[in-house]
Picture 1: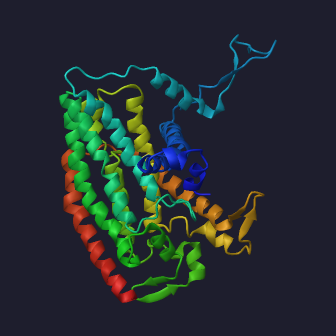
Picture 2 (picture 1 turned 180 degrees about the horizontal axis):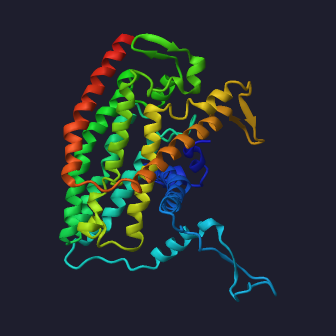
Picture 3 (picture 1 turned 30 degrees about the horizontal axis):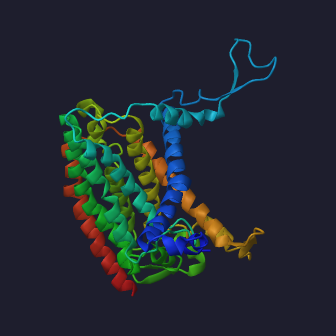
Length: 405
């Protein structure tokens, strides 16, 4: 049943509710479901994973103290006289942080622009949320399979920079403004090689549509005009765009992934909020839930852009070891009692999840491994190295596409 049919069962829906209001409500429901079912859990688990992994790398304790007290008559206290706790491996830390942030003051700095200051976190959050609309998570699990999917993702992902600039300008703080201007310079620069390398798979596929890019990688592998792998082996991951025009697309994926880190303001590209010289950059004057919206958007964008990287170069949900194993099993559907669920949907979720989570964990690893670059090094890396290499990748992929046609 579609959302139109579902809402149509509400008495007076078609008679008393204006058509434009119906469109707004129907468009709002999927967005709300993405926030509640995907973006919020991703943000909470991303913060938890970052804390635990950074503690492991630095050989220190991570969040493992927040738990739930157990109250039993005669057993409520241990030998120290304190209550027994279920520590839940530190999973309660996210709940504790949420309660803490909800209780903080919603502060607007004196002399700042209140409207822009309060709106900036929402703009940043909307930019991260918009990417999920064209993110293919499995067979049939995509909100909007638009025919300009890659272009849409690059365009919507750039909306975040507007919110960051609003936050820095409206804070009436020179450190916040400097951080925002750094972000503008950095993101605008790295969007150039990021877009170029994203076009490398597009040139091979001949389409900007995300599902077409996935379907193309399920076919055989043609490398420089030579058919190397058939469709049967391609299901195991040998048909990925990463292997096409080899080794050009390996370089293209590395450049794309590093540009993603720069767009996310992740270390070693965290200059917009560099504590050593800018206190906390454009976030300096924010607190409470508005501060947390910036980080929820960051972890949501980490997940989404990791999924986009996996879709463009690693076959997305459509090929890999899980799909290869599925090809050996002659089962097509699962009877759940409420309908038939495709095995391809289950396998697609598994494929998409392990690739995306692995790329996301790599981002966390890089943050706690590499030192922060200087701003001149950041810009030199982009314009002197990434842009020329990205141009070369486009030209060589065009040559590979012509040779394979």
